[in-house]
Amino acid sequence: MPRSGLCWLDGMDIKSLREPSRSSSYHRTSVKLLTIMMLSTSARHSRFAATTTIMVASFSNAAAFSTATSRLTSILNDPSLITFDSPPSQTLDVIDPGASAAQFKDGSAVIAHVRRMGRDDTKDAINRAHIALPDWRDKTTAAYRSGILTKWSSLIKESAEDIAKIMTLESGKPLAESRGEVNYGTSFLDYYAAEAIRPNNSGGGFISPSPFATPDGAPRGKMMAINEAVGVCGLITPWNFPIAMITRKVGPALAAGCTCVLKPSELTPLTAIALETLAKRAGVPEGVFEL
Image (spheres, rainbow, N blue to C red):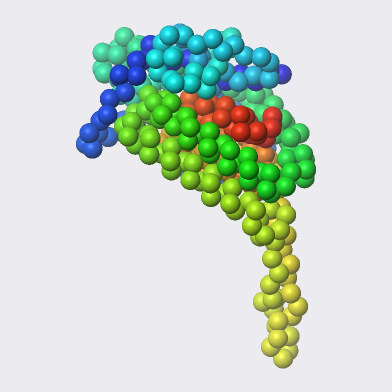
């Protein structure tokens, strides 16, 4: 079935992305970061992607429209980072945490609506990742996966300003900090692109003396370990580092030959959508990285 992550920003002009002073603070409390875990088909509902008064984003196995509105082009240098499809029936609001009390009262604090995905959507995403696993794990070399991660990192850097603007709108970070996080986030992709081709990475391993001893004290043989991809990984990331916590998890999973299903925070889904767009452009195959 087609998979859509629909998002649209309302009329936020880029001038509203002020450069806050050092005294600026985030408007949300911190959330606990959940580390990589394996997803089972009994996983709870996951919620991503988008829709709103002006449609800006969507990912679907079917063709998606890419007509950009004037409001969108005033925000992004590359509107094709986000495309759109038909609105979903159930949505969640994405709130601008820097909005005034008056904006919260009149509803203009809502900058996007994101598609609410349920248990069946989650199972479908896991199944797609499971189908894609054998080819990604067994029919690609470490050098090939490394090259894709490097390309993904380069594309994020090229779109750094657009991603920083999106991140500031949905998370409340100062724009300067959002720009800094783009660099921080891509550093993980660069690191794991290099790790992918090390002899002890996936497909490789090591040999070491046994910790057990013979009666005369010598090691009792040797131990050999072979590192392998574990399978489909479920990744859950918080709102406060919308890029870095994604690349920090997706990077090593893809480098090792795993496929993954990502559930970003429902507070900051737009950044994840942009990252998935660039991952596809970098050559990540369908099903390997699911939202």
